[in-house]
Amino acid sequence: MNSKQLNVFKIFLFIAGFLLVGAAFLVFNYPISSESISSAEKFFWIDIAICYLVFFIPFFFSSITLKNIDTKITSTVHIWISVIIFEIVAIAFAVLSLTEVVNIRISVIVELVVFFLAAIFVFFGYSAGNHIGNVQAKEQKSLSKIAELKSSFDMLNLKTDMWEDEFENQKKSVKKICDDIKYLSPVDSEASLKLEMKLMILANDIIESSLSSSELDVKIRELTNLVNQRKLLRK
Image (tube, rainbow, N blue to C red; front, side, top):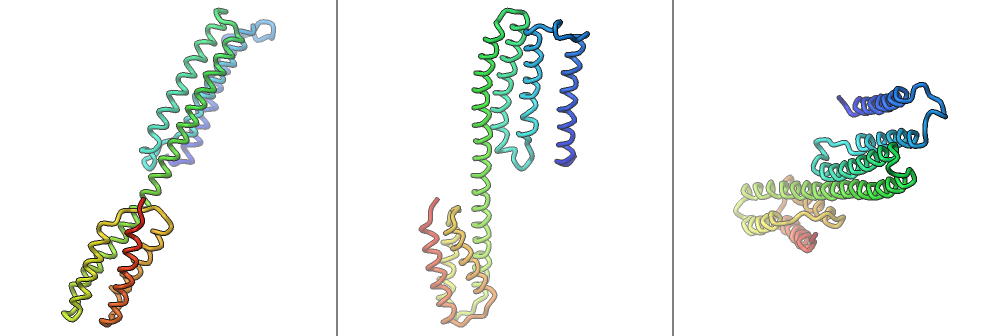
C-alpha cells in the first residue's frame, strides 16, 4: 500500500468511525427529540465525538516509516501517552457528568485544562521529532561529504604508487596529505563544504592529469593549504 492509498484508507476509517459514533447516538436516544435528551446526555455525546477526533489525529500526523522510525518513534510515544491521558480523563468526566456525580461545568473546566496540557506535550513531541530529524539529516550529509572526500584521496594515494622515482618527494608529500584527510572529522558548514569540494577537484585533477614535477609541486602546495584550512574547522 503506497502513501496515497494509505491516506485514503485513513480518511475512510475516520469517516466510518464518525458514522459509528453517530449510529450509537441514534440507537441510545431513539426516538430523538430535543426534550428527551438532557444536558448531561448532550455533553456526554459531544465529549465522545471530541474524544474520537483527538484519538484519530495522531494517525494523520505521526506516521512512521523506515526512513524516520529512529526520529519519530520517541516523539510518537509521547504524543500517544498525552492523547491517551486526555481520553481517559475526558471519558471519565463524561460518565461522571452523565450520572450527575460531577457538575457539567466542572467537567468542562477539567477537560479543557487536561487538553491544554496534552496539547503542550504533543507540540513538544512533534518539535522534538522534527529537530532530531533535521540534526540527523545534517549529520548524514556531513558524513556523506567526508566519505566522498576520503574516497577521492584514497584514489590519489593509489595513484602515487604508480609515479616514477623522480617524483619521490612529491609522493611523500601527497601521502602525508592523504593521511591528514583520513583523520578529518565531518563538519556541517558552508565553509567546510567549499573546502572539501576544492580538495576533491584538485585531487581528481592530479589523478587524471600528467603533470610535470614543477606543476605537481604547485598542486601539492594548494592541497596542503586547503587541508590546513579544513583542519582548522570544527563542529
